[in-house]
Length: 445
Ligand code: GLU
Ligand code: MG
Image (cartoon, rainbow, N blue to C red; front, side):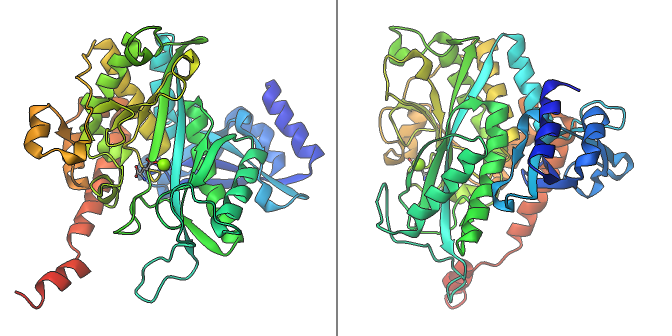
């Protein structure tokens, strides 16, 4: 047993923890949990705990359904919303096959594989997400629409507002669980909020996003409201994105920084961005994985629908923030296409892989887009070499299906499962006759 595992066992004794939840994620990014009695933990660290994976989305085909979960002691945290004594704790786990090898169907493993490929080049991938979400009243409105908890807008301070109290409660719970919050504010939509997590290595960030979504939902429930990470819950209001700031470090050195270069961006950074842009359309099905994701992407309101980059250009898919021009550690790139309903492990894995491909393939960065790309005509965009992101999940699926990079990064199992699942989602969606159609056509046609 290593020191972290010993620490976990000691803490469980000292704090009277009676239940330990072992967390993992299915291919679509839904959190799964098995409760383990503390007495079983020593064995769980050594050999893993067996479970039947066949009921979990994408984890196994029936014939290979026996799986092991191996808790990762470095992720141990007490769950603050479960009360003090006796307490409940959680750890993230890796999924293993019965022979102990990592399961290639485990999204955490997909990210770990992408990270170790970057580590072979001496590089560590850091990410910092800005997570947007809506807070709604518990009861839907008479027409079945969700009702936002307030009518405030961007950065509004609402005295005694539900959102303000909510953010304070959520942030203090996150901090109790060792997740540092950098920034939080009311976003542009009514009831829409944003909380930004401090940057960390991508595996910790992805774990933190899973915890974050759970904490935000728990805190909302406690307060008699509900939180949603749906990318576009209200047709006439902005969608919710999960812009992610990324950088690569070589030891303590920020590999994205070069003094004196345009925007302080090193050649590595430029090639990384070029990789992310070039492969953006084929990774959209992962970074924006739902039918509804494309209603945000194509809904304006500062969501990106076109593949381009710019300095401080909020309509661009990749933005170079300029808050601290001379701070080398802070030089980073903001990717604005992701939404908060993605599977963060898979999304960060494909972004890293696309960026690494740009570095290894020595891709050239196209010229930056200075204009508001929404304001240009299709023809102008074409002349500038600015391609659109896929317009629908269907379109995204087709592009992904053709992508070697996606197949390679996700691994055959996740790649195939994901496509199958998303095709079924699209087919179910396409079958619907929507209120829009009835309204537009029923009388007229
Ligand atoms: N809500 C916008 C989006 O969906 C982003 C607004 C912002 O710039 O933070 O990407
Ligand atoms: Mg925002």
